[in-house]
Length: 364
Image (cartoon, rainbow, N blue to C red; front, side):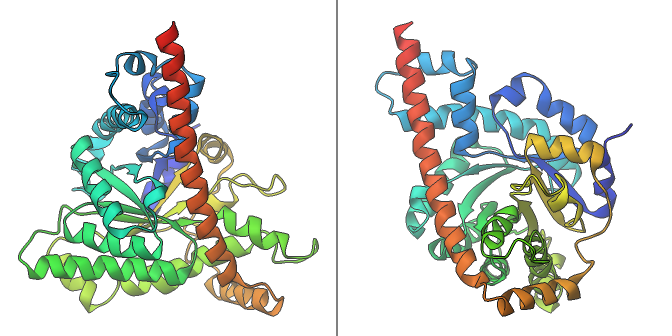
């Protein structure tokens, strides 16, 4: 039976793999899911690298041969760049076929810089130079300083994946910053057709936090994350990227900044494993999925143009949440802070994994 993922292209959604690291590249898994599931891009993060380094010997030789004067961060850069370059090369035919609309691999700026605009800009530019592939997206957190960094980087022609977005207000700020930066670049006579961006809007973490504040029998349990994402699409994406300002930019070759649904694996085992995939399918979207979600939707998914369905109901659910005394704005602010800390801890853990492996292979 053909994979149900293959049906999403006709509905306007791209599928990216949320586990890009050497095990998937060396085993042929990444190429296989590109072929069988129509995966057209990928994302990586320090947690993925840490697990790959700790649980396999695929990095051992590179770690063993690293110059003794290299810091652990230098070693990570070398390992990550090699993996990301390889993944970029695998999806480059997609990038070429779609004229730069799809076919990207993301590598993130470390979260320690999440509240430093200039530090984020400098590191993103450094990563772009190290990877040296036109279909790299550098991941930048969507904090307040991150918005300013994103605007500067877009103005400089760097393709960015803005991550850790939880609220429609923050997403709107990011979408408008993208339009502003492209307008500035175009007004200066610089090309804008080689720039792409996605806005990574996190889903399941919303329900995890909201459900904890709702009674067991509340009809809102397991509903708010999808409602929040649907309103992000309806009230931000469809508004910002459908107007005279945006249409003028498209005439100059601008690529729309697509919403990327992140954290789409379910956290509550009582929910369908395809809950956050089935309900957020639609034009100009991306879903980045880990292995469990990839396997679940392949067999159990329900393809359909769903992201624009039930928008009025989504508004009613968000209103009902307020009436229930749950402050969604406070939750999304907490989730951003929590996300930055989790990403920062993951980066530190990844460096520890490399240092531990370096010590081990040096002793062998």
